[in-house]
Length: 330
Image (cartoon, rainbow, N blue to C red; front, side):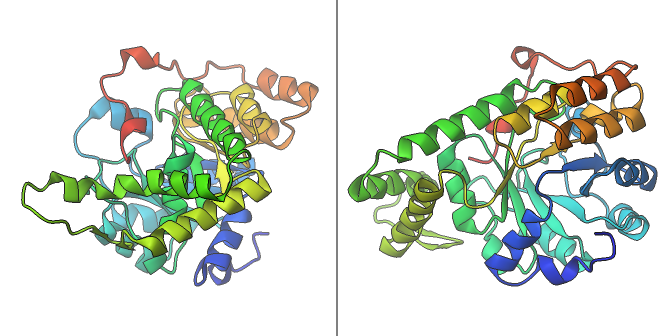
């Protein structure tokens, strides 16, 4: 796999973008902040790394505005690893995403872990050659991101906490809402689409002036937009899952957590703080990759858990958090 030229798969049409995302299916994507961590991730069998200056636990602890990582840091990771490299941009910050695309990263995460730049809209991902991954807490949010051009969806979870409960909540809700679609006829799917795209009207609703101007970075809020969203809903109803690769992220801290999310139907997992905030990151990385690959084999998952002799990251109860990152990104 490392001999493949990933750049030929990652850009161009929506089909190619989704195809590149599908190449990560069944694997672990690890947050890394330097070349040494990237080497740990690659040696453990990670399918890709996410380059960022601070893991989510440190972003949460240190506070302040979290932005795209410095290009020199990202370039250093690009230069030292043979597996795909992803990087994060702020929600709605097309400028950061254009920089990342020009640098040759393999995928962009328009991420709520960073401080949102646009309070109204996400990036129009269809305008880019590079594929995007976006977070979602529910099916309507996932559908909006897919409509905007996301090639991969991940649960938002609650990044940097080492607490898997939010990721489980989001996975459960998305699955429940997919099942609800099975009972909807065409007229009801249209009503559902109208409900989903109504969130795009928030900017127009902020104005105190008379009249309306319901235009978004993705085009006008009109019948064409409605039909495209209905088409996405119809595809989800038919295949009984999201039409893009769906990973779990946010709070995965142990091999058992990774196994749990895979058993819930996820196509793979993102792990950051859970590895590099543990006592033994290299062993934890190996163990999480093993548990993800053999998630349905209790003996293998037990073997993975037994490998982690050091303590996992301490973690946080969600009720104690001052800021809920999963509530960013509408």
